[in-house]
Structures are given as C-alpha cells and as structure tokens.
Image 1 (cartoon, rainbow, N blue to C red):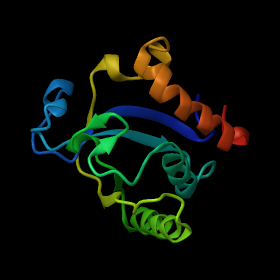
Image 2: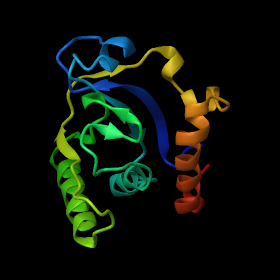
Image 3: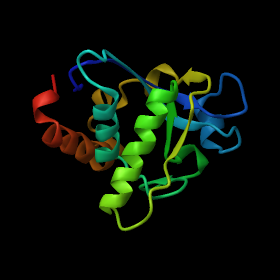
Image 4: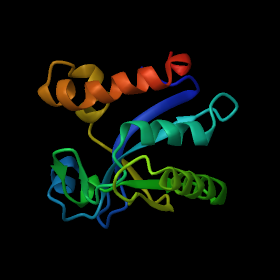
Length: 157
C-alpha cells in the first residue's frame, strides 16, 4: 500500500554517531540513531505537507523516546528535512497541530536537517507486507495501515 506519488520507502537509521549501523546496535540505544524511513516522492503528484499529514495520522508525536510499547531514543519522534522549505513546512504543521490541541500532551517531534541515512538490513524492508501474520504487524502496524487507508482513501494505490 502506498500513497500515490510516493516512489519509494526505505527503512533505516539516521541521526547517530556510528557509521553503517545495524539493527542490533541501534536497538541497544548506544549509537544515537533513530529508526526512520526515507521517503522519495514526486512533488508534482503529492506534496510534502500531505506526507507530513500521513506521518502525523499514524504516529504519536507526544511521547519522547517512545512509540507504543517500543521505548528508547531510537524511537524518538523526529522529522529530518532536506532544506529550508521542508523545515518551514514541518514547523508550520507542528504549530498548527499544537494549536488545534489534537493530542492531550504537547508535540515533542524534533525537526532537524537530514543527516546521513543508513538503509536497514534487507529483512527490515517491506516488513509489514512480508510478515503480515507476525504479532507486531497485526497489533501495531495493521491498525495504522487501516487508519492511513481510511484518512487517505482517495490517495492510495
């Protein structure tokens, strides 16, 4: 499942101190990396703001160093931007969402310049599609995917 205009999504790591990290070292919390996805998109088909809306629709931006039951700095809420336009768009959206008080707690999502992106190991790519019966996928990812399909029904291919 992809949003129309998204050309690729690669799971990986960014924002840490160690070159070429692997899953085990990132999960240990000692590398400083966040688990992230690199999204390449056709801006003539889908704009950056819409991608941010999708991010905030399926992501809890209020928990520092946590997403659901996953705890640690590698699960921090962060948007790595490529240039001032993306940075301004991300900061403006966070301000709008904060003013709308959608969540009961403050938004803690950091907005930072994109550092080196390190792709995750092959078995982490397309994890949900390749492991639909895995309990994490059923209980954590599937509800997020369903919400994305509902909110962006006209934009899913």
